[in-house]
Image (tube, rainbow, N blue to C red; front, side, top):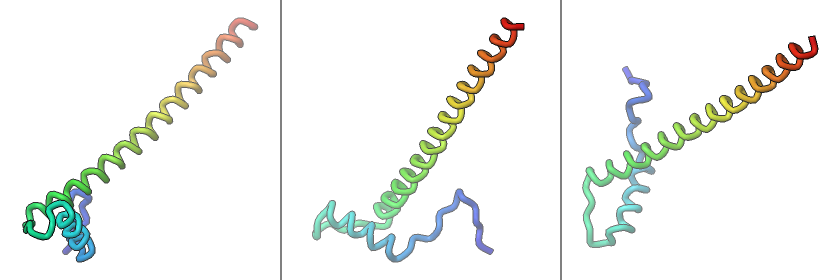
Amino acid sequence: MADESPDRFAEPTDDDLARVATILGKIGGPHVGWGAQQSLDVLLVERQLAAERLASDRLTRATWVLAASTVALVLATIALVVVTVTA
């Protein structure tokens, strides 16, 4: 029974591991051996960046919705003042 929780990471694919090994190989050179901890660190940093980007996008969207709502309230207030003054 697989857990589909968004808080759990999927198992890294062979392509993911090869890409991480390439990144670490370019950083350390051919004479440095990297272990599983360093590979996990790279994968976690990538996922953290993706999560932060998603949170930033959501916050930006919420800010625009709040700004649009504020403009709508200003227009409604102006209309209410105009109706009140002309009545």
